[in-house]
Length: 435
Image (tube, rainbow, N blue to C red; front, top):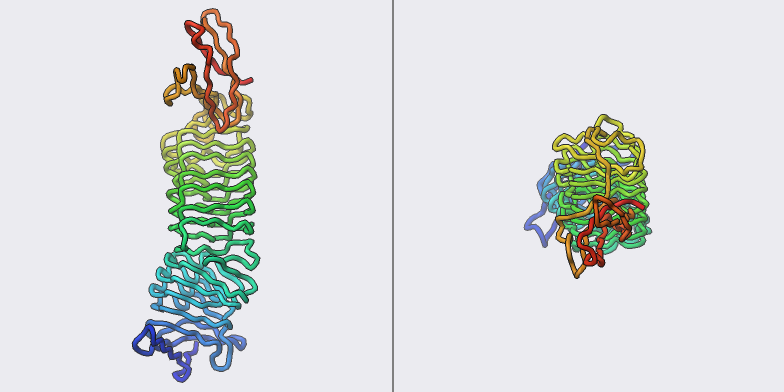
């Protein structure tokens, strides 16, 4: 390793910001006629990295080169083609950067970083580059850049078909993704805690790994029908996310996609065939979940530490459970299945470590709508969504003559039945059946 000679030390005069000149001594290595910056041991303050040293181009900044250093402002020349992993991780004083290509976690935990300029030289940006940069409010790409573009401080690829990075402290607490976007990139909204609402357009097909990791301000998300895949940990640790609506074409839900979310009830669409590991791990508020008709394989830990889970409802035939049970180790939930589906044990026997029961239509007697309303007797019926229930009535249980008096389609899993003829009989009894 060499040290830049005193004559080549970088003297920076920031008259508007500092009362005196700040010196920064950079260390570097030479390899194949190029310079790699490996660190610095000068005073805290702003740094301008030169484009050449000893007549050789500065092209790389090494892994961990400035990790935890007290750099305030940084200018990196267009000659730099790569910035290594964690190169500026946890720089506590860094507020603004003009930069070349960006490596994985390059600016992680830079809690004062507010603005970033991407010049024309940038080609790649690594994973979790800005994780923990909680004050980053705008990322601007040079219009001359061939790979990236920006709109309103949000970074995209050049054609704006992929959203690369939403700044954690973006100007709006609500954001509508442009309808040019087909892909939400890995870590695109990583730790954007201030984001309270996001609108995902019907143009989006894929949501990448950790796409909304720890977006703790989100309470509700609608995934459009266009989306076919959720990456690993897509909504991991979105603690306040209580409601998610999944589109009808969603085919893959990645491992840990909703781990530690605040979800209360969930419906998995019929398009999903495999439930990956730990998808709902530690969703402590989850009370009920309905799994679509095509779920065929369930991996392990999907309900581990879901301490409030009471009902697991299956619309299809019994899936393969690749481990002995659902790893659900608190109060035991009940697995419900429809009478005409196959592969299930007898009611009361266990499946996935949980007791089973037939899933049948139910009349609701305690929800405030049971009884006489607007001069008609009625009640809510609940069952699987879009099922059809026939209501029959008779006047004598000793000699029953059951007559159909209503047919209800349970849109969204419920429907209200009312009998306008109830006053014509001294007493009337009701029962439910499928058509």
